[in-house]
Structures are given as structure tokens and as C-alpha cells.
Length: 236
Image (tube, rainbow, N blue to C red):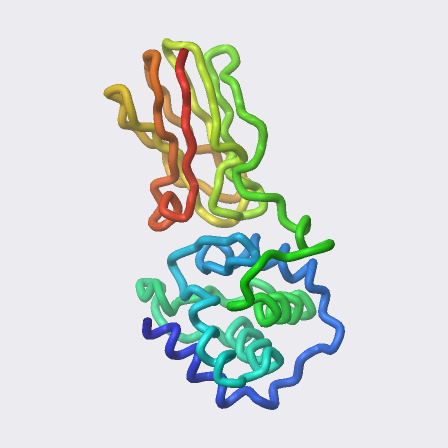
């Protein structure tokens, strides 16, 4: 709540912030999903992060009271360029410096400003700029190993929400190419196990013995499962 108030309060100081006239909204959406979506909810970007402020909620009141979207863009760009100097333990206010820089920071700010609290769905090129999280084809175990990579774009999802395997010994590997940390865990049928948390090309792995039935796989990093980073493994 404090972080949302700080965002809204900053609006009054940013009416004259410079902003690039011709931002690349497609590039901005892609970068937002990859670099920011794990922490922030923004409905049009289909991101569901819970660690930082919900950006639709943060700007809804100000927009309804007449603040322009150019003003919102200035606020977002300023916060990207000069994040609050707070400890990492302050989850709602902390944001790493240098997530995006230069023209790309302007593109991200422009996309957030154009999308926040807008409702509806993106259209045209924006609609396909970021693949739908977790919408990949079902994966099937092969040779006793099941590959369930994390979404490489940084969204809070695995590449698929559906997996299957025959019963018996099973290794589950989840490679994470993104800079956002993830792991993989499995529960159900008497099984409860989780792999290590990895990022930047690391692999989170577990070795289990599964019986016929349904199992849930998910990420245990705070807020990730709640944002949709989970799926169902069917053993038959």
C-alpha cells in the first residue's frame, strides 16, 4: 500500500517530465514482461507479479482524477531511472537499479502509461508481442525424464501447464534461462519434493517415484505460484 501511495503521490511532481514522442510500445511490452512482470501486475501485459505494486491499481485513481497518461509515463520513467533507495527486504518498495536503461526504459514507461487501468486487451502487434504464459504444448516424459522449462521471457510460468508420465522413477528438470529466480516442486500422491532455486540458465531438478494419479508442479519462490506458475502432471 505504501508503495502504491508513493507512486500516486509522485504524479504531482512529474507533470513536466520529458518523454520521447515516438516510443516503441511493442518493445516496451516485451521488456516489461521480461524484466518487470515477475513483480508487478499489469492486466494488459498479462503479468501477475505480486512482489511490487499492482500498476493498474496504482494509477487508476490518478487517471480518473484527470492526470494524463504522459504524466504517468514520466512517473514510471523516473522510478525506473532512479529507484527508491530502500533495502531489498522491503519487498513492496524495492526495485533493482538498471533493469532497463536508455531508449528501452522510455519504451517500458510508455507502454505502462498507455496500458495502466485501461481495461480490455491489447490489439494488433501488441496482442502478439508476448506469448501467453504457460500456453505451450503438453510435455511428455521420455526415458524417465520430464523437461518442464521456466518461461524464458521471464514471465511467471513454465512453458506449459500440462505434463504426463508413466508411473515409476522420474526425474523432473526445469531449466530457467531468465534472470528471475525459479525452482520446481511436485506434490501429490504422497510425494512432496522441490529442487533448488536457479536463474540465468540453471536447472532445478527433482527425482521422485510416481504412481498413477494427478500431481501439482509449481514454483515455490514467493508469489510465483499465486501468480500462476504451476501445472498438472498426470501419471498413467
